[in-house]
Length: 455
Image (cartoon, rainbow, N blue to C red; front, top):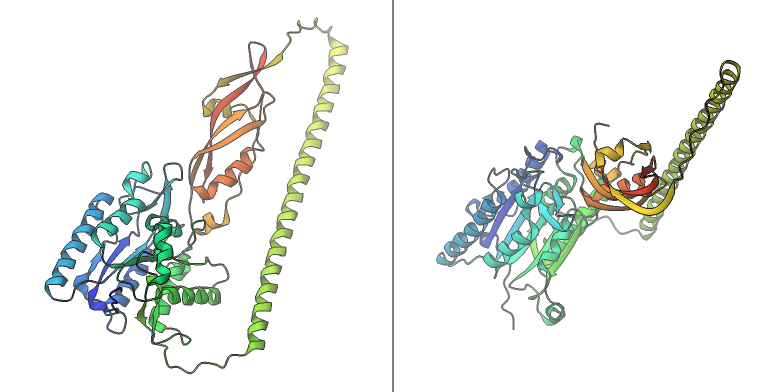
């Protein structure tokens, strides 16, 4: 039988991480809104009308200038010290809450997920940021017997959940457990593993944290006296849907289920509990659903029409350009023929040197190959990247075919949001065929595609 613990805010330890400025990583958007988001959440935690957590149980590492490794050591020391201190006070720690707001990014070719800190360096993001696997290890080692709650407000934050996955047999065994497990892990993520979180400048906070703190402060009339992380996620989704036209859906994950699902433990006081609720009207609810479906369908159709118009205009411009070029070439050729026939005798033709295709390949540096680029198509800037104000360079490995077309492409580095746009654009590029020893040859080269908000 599991020993059951109810929630007590005096027995909760809190760690707050993130940064509002990234001096060594200029491609990461900075701003006061990140700090204000973290400060609002901290104020709610310490407020007697909020969660009422003791200030001595909160570790503030936001905008810390130290290296990522030093911050991880500090987290481990804080958890160890406060756990022992509360145990001596006969009030042992039961819960641990970690909140992060900033930028989530991928390093090492998109395989390693990291949380950016103030000391993050764009030349080596993986080594200078807090790697998800390292933070998960610190929490497992130093908060082993605590229920762990993580709230992550950053791009692709749901990727973090895989660092806490428990074995399938353990997950299956949880179906036989009681409520209020003594330990486990749950995450409330501002976005899925594929989406970028949003931080509109006019909002003054990140979109997710703004909705999060409003729900915590105001409560929800449909919930009980207290609500859980799972219910908090649903309430935040409802608030985002009602307040914003373009928003990203948060997700709740409970990867560590060895002692049960702690996402259902009721933690947060509901200040809207007991208010009179409007009677449920099935017809109005169905009408709202229909109106939302119609609106979404109209938006999809409008986007498709706009894309079709843009494509037609692009084809028309290319066709007009090709016709003008052909007319100019024909005119110049006729003038040349007339002048040559009138004023000079043409020299004998040069000897014909046969050029053959034999499948040879040479390796050129990217800058040299750019000099023979005949047709370049600029990439489409991904809307999510533009909204999140993400910019950077995608490096591609390319094989240029004997006829100058791009034969093969492979992404090497860069932000995952830009990969598809870069590949789609470069596949349309055309180079002047390369000749070596009177033979057309393939070219092995590197291509860089720059995504900048200034262009």
